[in-house]
Length: 125
Image (cartoon, rainbow, N blue to C red):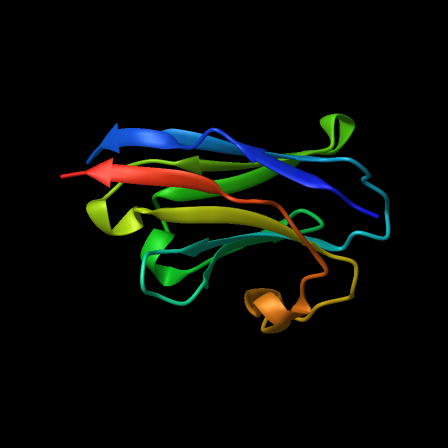
């Protein structure tokens, strides 16, 4: 059973930066993809970024602004968020899939097996 704990959310002004962390209780070779999703008030949860082995994937609306990475030695996933906008305000979730996902599949939240509790990011304009 994989447990995920996000941290690093908070309130930031537009144009600012935040770094989210996601600590995993178990991190083995069987975990193929780690991803970030977000859910804004009144909206569905959407894909933000994912990392599969050493490859990274991003939603178009965060390309060039967000970077995801992971430290296997620390069992931790990161999301570096720069040039934040008010539209980035949401609860951010990390997730893990133990499946061999395709590039298309890693953007689908239904393909993920374990989820963190989420961390709130609020960007003031």
